[in-house]
Amino acid sequence: MRIVVLTGAGISAESGVPVFRGSDGLWEGHRVEDVATPEGFARDPQQVHAFYNGRRAKLTGGAVEPNDAHRALAKLAAAPGVELFLVTQNIDDLHERAGSGEVLHMHGELLKARCQSCGAVVPWREDLSRASVCPACGEIDCLRPHVVWFGEMPFGLDETAAAISRADLFVSIGTSGRVYPAAAFVSWAREAGVPGLEINLDESDGSSLFTESRRGRAGELVPRWVDEVLAGRKDQG
Ligand code: OAD
Image 1 (cartoon, rainbow, N blue to C red):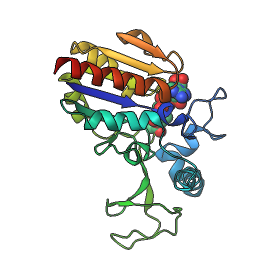
Image 2 (tube, helix red, strand yellow):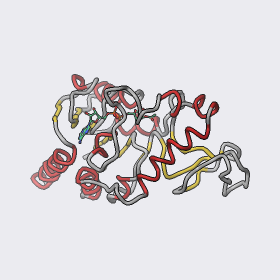
Image 3 (tube, helix red, strand yellow):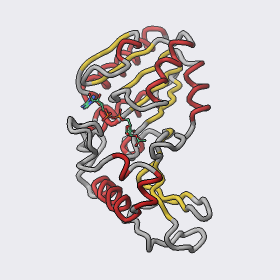
Image 4 (spheres, rainbow, N blue to C red):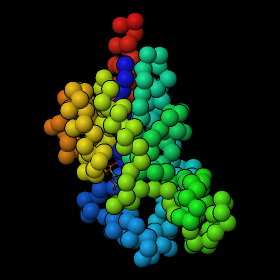
């Protein structure tokens, strides 16, 4: 069985990573244009570094751990007869820490930095600043967070489109469906005749496009759904 799973901020909410869209439309008190665009970074790199340094420190500080939903997806990937393509909009490393081996981070990774001078992508767990030195080329003032900002192209879209087109099931977990192209994946699935399942706390912008929508916490509903899939595979086999 080929399954494509898309995850968003909602899957990490129970791990203590805040979701993006608060009722005030701000990201932890910041305007999106200031901290998540190439223009914002060009205008005030130090402010953008400070924003991501704070998020990175939370991730590495020991308080944030994977939850049952991350663990259930790792279990699904390891099950015989299941081919899981896991694509996430999240920049945290909670899928990996839960044991998922192959994860496509379409919006990049908080624990990596990218050199704007030589293009190297390097692991990075410390604070970044204009004084940080690229370990590959030795330049300073050239490293940026390896994350995708608004106006930039997400990673792995061709690969994702191909995986969706040959899937038996598309599943979306914990995403508001507000940000494209991820929000269009359910339409890509529909066009290919692939059924869609949504697991989300609230109704999302794309809820009506799914074959089935389940409302509730990912930490509870994802393990339940994975157990259903695995029980179904046993029944068949
Ligand atoms: P959002 O913050 O837009 O949406 C999070 C969704 O998760 C909401 O629909 C909530 O109802 C749901 N949710 C919250 N807690 C949940 C829980 N415990 N269990 C299940 N669902 C829960 O986050 P994303 O859709 O991931 O992009 O945002 C998409 C993109 O917008 C991000 O990747 C980021 C941002 O701009 C970039 O930075 C490029």
